[in-house]
Length: 81
Image (cartoon, rainbow, N blue to C red; front, side, top):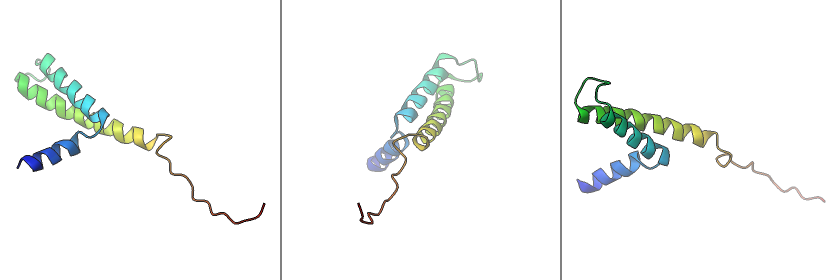
């Protein structure tokens, strides 16, 4: 049980954007409970999930547009000078 939880936890929070988005969302939910007119813990969970989604989107968007993520073209040496 603990091993499955750790695998899930590490899979969901493996990127810095996702971690920061989740924490900022949870803090926003704790700080302003009047937004959804609900309990503070429920708002923190909802905003944390929204922050997780935004962080996952940013992580995917940044990795696709990164200069380091582009694969080098395969060149074949054909001899010559």
